[in-house]
Length: 193
Image 1 (cartoon, rainbow, N blue to C red):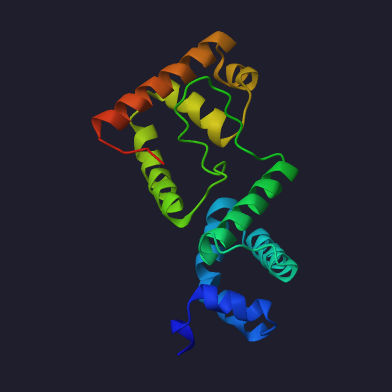
Image 2: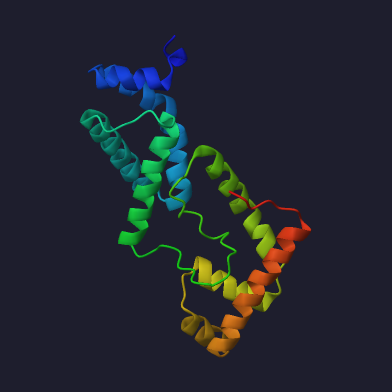
């Protein structure tokens, strides 16, 4: 019977002081939220910590009466988790640093402030397509792209590691993005949010 109670009803019950209502909400959504967090941080302990912090924030917001029923409960909790993931990366200086002037931002996987479940599913699909796309690039472009995006290396470090000038490294990155865009168009992959 519990599973049929709407999230919004459970939220109202919890605000009125029924602690059990929050327990039902957490049990209902914990797998989805924890999986989402883990998919971004790839560390079970860190994911657990962020999950705990997420619900501490949820509880504080609900107790303060600051929660408005504009959106649904789950996307709201996902946004909180998403912001805490960003905080975690900032603290650990592991935010993906992509400063290209190109408007092709397939790599800004964890930068969307208006994250919701549908957008997350789209981004997860893009993530899964990403390795396939990168594999189609010429080796020199693939190498620069992987070093820049996934190893968070500066163009100076890339130039030193690949034994080319910084301008060559920048050029390869630019061509990698142009080629990725062509591959995306050729395969009709939709990257709209």
